[in-house]
Length: 555
Image 1 (cartoon, helix red, strand yellow):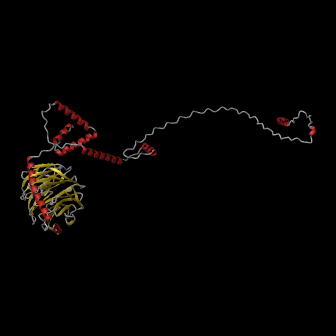
Image 2 (cartoon, one colour):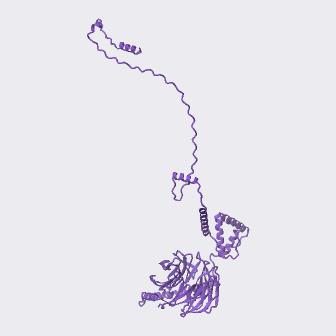
Image 3 (cartoon, one colour):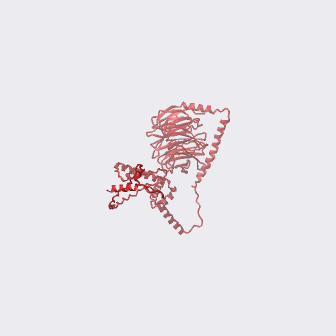
């Protein structure tokens, strides 16, 4: 019904009305039936149906959200120092996860760690002890021990042992952080005690050096006079060889090396029941002396090699023997901390006492008036042969002094030791004028060349080094042997060749001109411990017998 009403209304509304003019009569609409009026089709208007109202539904009230758990704080690793790379976040997380885990360490690993920690602590303690300044005067060492509340001496303790005990104690206190406080407290107590005492009227000025004796002053004067004459003769001979047209130095050296190459074994003899440790030939080549670990030195006649006498007196093993350059007296060194002077009959003429540890090598001054000894107490000493007085106690090596020799002019002395160093000393002033560093292991032997400016050293690194005193550096390195070099000796006449003895059971001869090998003396059945060259003869000692080889005199 609603639809029909709407259609009728729309039709009536849609019919058009024709307007008429004022003077025209009305015309009936029926009279115009033959003509159909133009009627436009009616477009029905769509009316949107009414929409039912949407019922209001109450919204559900949301539940309160649970609180977010707080994240534990992340401990970041410390920043990298000394060029270390900074770890990333993922690495730090991994490290945190690993740190939370516990690992079981085996008993063996724990013992290894404890042993490594102990070794590390001992190394740090040694480094700390080496860096500490410890007084060298024994009275100052005793005073320092008294300040620290320690006994100033122990039963049977020597000076060097007391000093090492003080060094160890100071290092321990320094590691615990108590050294500075203790020393400061003692210094304050001493300052307070000194302030309470009346000040002296005048201060006593002590010298910074150790004053030598009058005998040392006289000895230095004698050494200076002797060395001036000897050096003048050496320089005159060198100038004559250089300027004289009749002198052919190369030909003379070649002839000397050919003679050395023809070196042959002359005899072999049993020297002692114990291994031999040293040998020496007299200045005229008529006598031979040997010493052994039994503490007995023996004198032999040359060239028959017959025993003349046995020198008994040392209570420990004998370490070296040396003939006087002006007489038939000889000196021996021993591990009983003494050196003794003997005659050929075996009588002790003098005993040199003063060293605090065993002796190593011994050497005569070229004048024959003085004797030098090297010792394991880190010092070498100069003695007066006539009086037996100790003229000089010289420190300078940080470890034991093993070898000693004198310059042919008599002005210089050279020492070598277990600190891998060689030092040259001026006997006229007492100063260390040269320090040679190059050996990587202890140096056991040292020898001056007769030319006056070359020095040879040999040691446990199996090499022999030639040093130039003028250039103050190493001139040549000879890879001489396959084992340590026990002794080196220049030929004493002109120094045209050099002899080295080694524990590889060989001795070798080297040219001093270009340091090439000239001759290898093999055949020894054990270590070659000593060698001596004098008066045109070469003596080689092996253990427990010695071999004598001869060559013609050079010049």
